[in-house]
Length: 449
Image 1 (cartoon, rainbow, N blue to C red):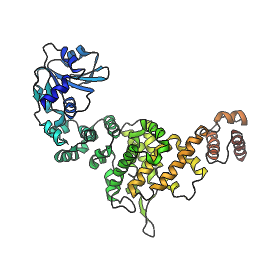
Image 2 (image 1 turned 30 degrees about the vertical axis):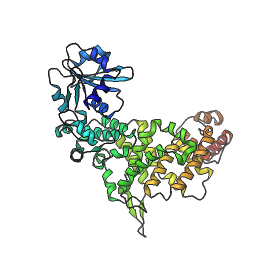
Image 3 (image 1 turned 90 degrees about the horizontal axis):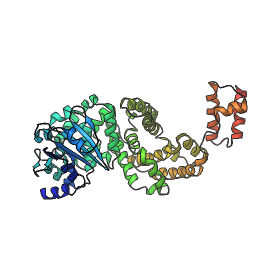
Image 4 (image 1 turned 90 degrees about the vertical axis):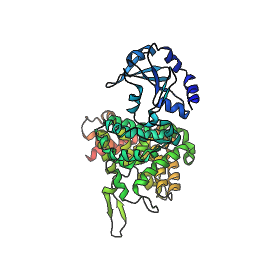
């Protein structure tokens, strides 16, 4: 193992350059760099610890900037590589390793004398393919390590060790004291990855998205024996499976992959929590049938508030809320015997390119329910996509406020919005097709007033 590690380390294009900058310092390769060398992954992010001043050593490598106020930790960018330098002062390397988050990150290799440090048996855990917390105190010091551990498990395809998982659950509530923007960042990083559904530990996500665990009390739909909570996680898995193989929407695969480039983690988050308000909206009719009236609208309103608390951007909040708020639309269209042009126009004009995201979600949702409606969803989705890309140039505002001033001689006022909305709705539903017809309709609306 050591021979393999040395061969990998000293053949790296940046590490030898780092060693040459040394004078009297001890220089250690640490943390994730060691882990990735042992696993055989490409190493672009290099973590080193040095005796003495981290800033002084980092400045020898290149232009540096500070990473953490509480530590002498600095970052240098070298071409496509990131080098993080931690100053140890006069502390031994073992002390630094004991404060690290997980055993597989608590290893070090002395680049000068070749000594290998593994006080917490990280190598064994790599061989066992498990994530094990270094010690309980480290989770208390920084609860965000819970999310990092889940993300690491997804990234490496490792399992969370049983005792570590119990600690994650025990201290999940401490995430409430973590900076919300850091929680958001961890979520986005994890949901960018393949198989991110594996990182969803329900008790932890119940803290991030209050009410998440309540879905365990409700069934996951007709013809299934899973809970709504299991259905929600399965929806993310089915979405990820679809992204790996776009066969159901093959004709539009390239366009949809381009669309997903910026929307992927947001779509997965929406898929995970799309039914979170079902427990609050459950009702029964006289026949005993179950209904969840308005659960999608309530879910969208809830995330608008929760997204702000977690410091998601307005654009991110609007997107996730839009998917949640409209997640029943395509399912309803797929139950119709005939998919009319009016129905296609309405969904396209309201959602624009995001109709692609809703179609991908709807397929995953159908598959995670019982799969009986999947074929109809595929047919409906493809029909809408064909119409969207054929009519894309026509998707626009048919008239603007300036047209009301120019052609009708109106003075701007609050009623402008009402007129424009009624005209646009008529255009989207196919009642009018040209700007001339839109102006005529606007005139009729004004006369009504």
